[in-house]
Structures are given as structure tokens and as C-alpha cells.
Image (cartoon, rainbow, N blue to C red):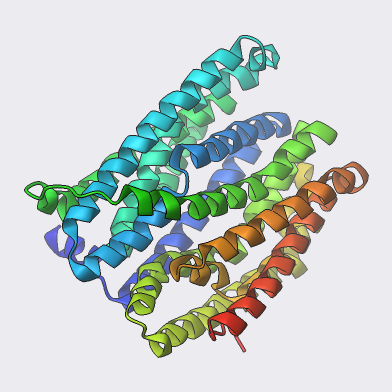
Length: 433
């Protein structure tokens, strides 16, 4: 067991990248399997309700964390270079306290709004939402824990609980329900998600305690509140806008389409996310190394990391995208059922967007880890405004296909703009050519 833990604790960039890709691939596999099980054993409407509740909790996790996960990765990596462990302890104390207090405020607002707003909705979504709120502190604190480990370059330990294992445990519970013929509905699915997230949180805390917290016990914390608050603002804007951009269309679809459209869009999005899993995996792996290289002014090494990562991303993304583009129709029918035929065209459109994004490389990560998060946040805000303007008419006239066009258009446009920016101002080329 100790040998396995030591292997998972490797801090070099090759081990981190390989481990992160393997973990993300496994996580994507189980997430896809979970989507299949939910689609097969729940009605289209029930799946739509589940997606809406989980989407709501994901969005509420943004004000609960306010960009602190990215701040932790950047600053813990920075403080580790100079061995400022007192500041690391102070940052951990303040960030965890903030998540607890912000979650309590969200609970208070949700409790007050229940009586004059969302208690009037369908009882299925109301009951599911009530259980869903239990996810909020687990999501927030788990994000902080993962970011702290990532900042210390324990990338595999950071990724393992909240990605691969959480989806694996969720799969086990869904499979158990299917085998035992226990009826699946949105409330049961959310309860399973809470249990899986709770188990992942406990395991992640054990990892963090062994690798960092034990060594900080005898150290007196120091605080740099003004700097942290100043830097948190653009990080919070970035994380918030990115989550809202990816989830907002679910609400537009249910408002101007139907709850079934949410389920169809979710199936297409899950397929497109498989194209992007290498991008997400390698971004998580290289983020502390990018930050360290920039702090040491080693721009040649930084360019080498970014170039090799970009090519790997496209190498793995291209075959997945081509499979969905040319064989996605039959695959969707066989895996999810004929009820989800309408997800094929949106799937193709979003796969094209993800392939273009993979060609541009880790441009957003580069900006975030080199002190240019304000540029990234401004770009995210602009893309959100474009999405807001286009989403309603596109959904009204083209339904799920319109939503896919909007999300892919903004993704491609943003990558082109930011790619030009980093080439001009950082003299770094993130593209594959």
C-alpha cells in the first residue's frame, strides 16, 4: 500500500501528466457510463430534472468558492518555491473559512426564497433540490483540497478522488440499483451523488493531511489578505463565467424549450466532453509547472511545456472527435436509445468546437498561471455576453441545435482571440503549429 501511495505522490511533470490523463480517461469513461445508466433507467423528463438540479449546485459552488481553487494552485506553487509555509497555512485557513461562511449564506438565501419562489415548482424538482443542497459544501471544500495538492505538485493525488473515484462510486451505486431493480429517479440519483462526493472528500482529506497539513501544525500562520483578495477577483470572475457559460444553456432550454431538451443537450455535451478530456487532464497536470516556470522566468522551458502539451491534446482529441462526427448517430442510438436521436447534430457541432479548442492548446491556463488572469476574465465576460445575446433566439428557432451552435461559436472565437494575445504579449505559441 505504501508503494502505491508513493507512486501516486510523484511530482515530476511526466508522471503528473501521464497519471492525470489516465485518471481523466477513467473518469470520463465512468461519467459516460453513468450518463448511459441514467438515460436508460430514467425517463427523459426525470433525467432533465436531475441535470437541472446538479447544474444548479455546480453554479452555486462558484460564489461558494469565488475562484479560490485557482488562487490556491497558483499561490501555493509560488510559496512552495520560497518555502513560505506560514503563508500556505494562512491561505488554507482563510480559503476554507470563506467556503464555510459563503455556503451558510447561500443556505440562508435558499431557505428564504423557498417560501415565495421555488416551492411552487413540480414536487419532483423541489425534493431533489432540497437534497442537492447537501452537495454544496462537499463540492466547495473538495475543490480547495484538490487545488492545494495540485499547487504542491501532487497532481495525481489531487485528481484521483474527485474525478475517477467519485464517478466510479456513483457507477457502483447506479449498477446496484439496476441489479436490485430499485427504481431510479432524480432524488435517488442526487442522493447517490452525495454519497459518492462525500466518500471522495474524506479520501482527499486523508491525502492532503498526509502530504501537507501534518507539516503545517507547528507553523504559525501568516496572512496576506490584501494581495489574496485582489488576485481572487479575476480568478472568481473566470471560474464563475466559465461555469455559467457551460450551464446557462440548460436554463435557456427549459425556459424556451422543454425539460426533455435539457436531457438531450446533456447527452450531446457528455459526448463532446470526451473530446475535451485530454485538454482538461493535461491542464490540471501542468498548471503548477507552468506557474513555477513563469516565476523562475524560464520562458524557454515554459514554451516547451506548452508546445508538447498542445500536441498531445490534439493527438488524443482528434480520433475521439472523428468517431463521434462520423459514427455518432448509430452510437447514440445504440448506447442511449432512440429517444436521444436528436442529440446527434448538437454532438457533431460541439465536437467541432472542441477540436478547434484543442488545436489552440492551453491558452486559458497559460494566462491564468502567468498573472494574466484579468485578460482571461475580460475575454470570458465578452463571450458570456455574446452567449446571452445569441442563446435565446437560437434556442427558440433551433432548439438544442441552436444551443450547440452558440456554445461552439463562442468557444472557437475565444480561442482565436486569446491565441493571438499570448503570441503578441507573452511571446508564447500554444497552438499545435
